[in-house]
Image (tube, rainbow, N blue to C red):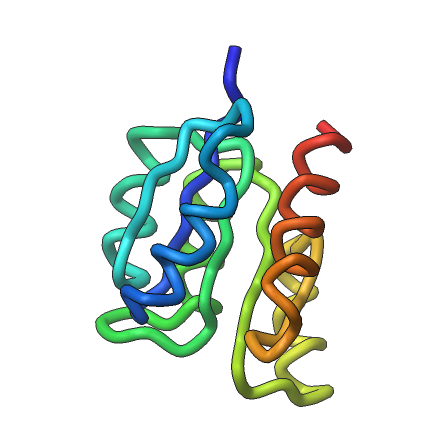
Length: 121
């Protein structure tokens, strides 16, 4: 059975880049463009991994993670952000995140973090 990934990223080009790098692996890839859509899709899909951008419209990544955890969805979560700070990292840890990566990391590092998270299941 393929592992399910929900990629929540409001920048379409970034989302497409990550999805294209994951094609060919044994993953079912779903996407969302804002935090509210991520929560709604997580309820239905119950993904193994959620990749959440922190800054998004409608509902930011932290709030989306909070709502996902309240629903008792135990997906691993990787936060991805262009704005790293110690406070943000500390806040993100409250939601049981697996990893925290900056968007300016090489794409291969982000894909490697996704692969590693799914191998750990």
